[in-house]
Image 1 (cartoon, rainbow over the protein chains, first blue to last red):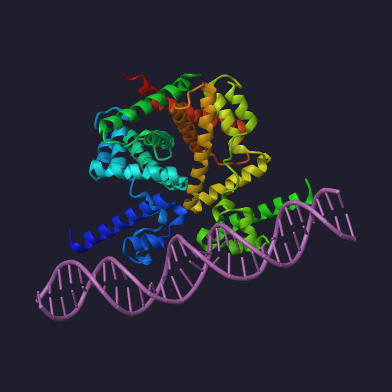
Image 2 (image 1 turned 90 degrees about the vertical axis):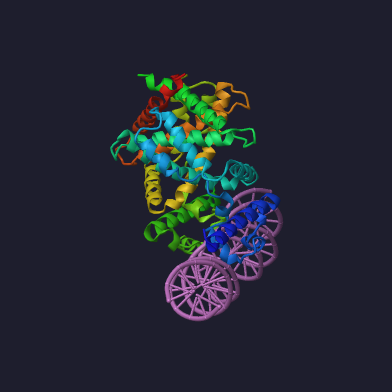
Length: 204
Length: 204
DNA sequence: AAAATTATTGCATGGTCTGCAAAGATTGAC
DNA sequence: GTCAATCTTTGCAGACCATGCAATAATTTT
């Protein structure tokens, strides 16, 4: 990776960090883009070369779209053959993304603090979950061979994202929390979901 | 209702209608609050006495919070005793609101057009569904007697709202669509949900 | 008809975000 | 190392959104 690219990454992170730090200190309304940019030693105009909105700088990159390789494996029926287990696998990749675990954890913890301090930001997170939901529905349709006008996959994806949102809420992102714990919590949520609404399906 | 109140209602509707009409004609970015206000024969400043944002004028009032009476009945275990059926009943009241059916249908149809034309507006709708979700979770917790730290109701509510969102997407709001049809579609969605995830709950 | 209440309006202001063109930094070729 | 090509940063002007405040206008109450 060349110098140019490295500098861009650094600027991006500096802007994100400044945005998060200042917002946690003073609150969203009390921080201007101008101040964030100054903190990162770039002009206000440059801020908008990196992020379309102030909110975008705060939310970071997750939840991003699922990992492409995991998605392909899911579509062809893998890795285990069990629908829900494979769904969980592909979803986890969209949440934990590429960074190392410690960094990611710290990001998540900060974002959680941000949500509590500034509930307006929840809107943006919901929008991102919605995007993932749409892509997930397409993957489910591919895997199950549903016809394009069948909207069943959309519903299944929507419920799955509800589970993911719920699980995210429950995680505390501490050092003792392992990847396996995350999976276990998602599994528990899917099981609860099945218990709550499964019986209704059996009703005539 | 006095003259003052009637005028306010009229102004509110005029602003909403103007906002929707202009946006469908030209697109959201090509319509300013100034133009909307002019169309409704009030000052720009007055627009903001009625709506906090341009988006708010476009989205109208739904989905609003569930009807208070329906909520109370749900909490005490009514009206039928079947959890999902009663859930549907209370949810329907939060969607169809108070207006007469024909007016409401027209509103819904326009809003659906708006969503297609301006996907940015979906964010706002998602935020509203999220609010309903929170209140719904509280109602579910009350009905089932769950303890305050139990987050099961949140998950059940999230899934229920996923079903509602999905059903809203599917409705076409035509004249031939009866209230009974709406309920049938919600029921079908809940059944599909149960079929998709119910089996997973039975897995060891 | 006067007084009290509430709504509308204009004005000033601060903030977000965009387009554009000039200046500055990095890259790759030679 | 120099030069040209490419990409990034920056300043500036400008449109628009949104808020606070104080004056004016309309309605309601007495």
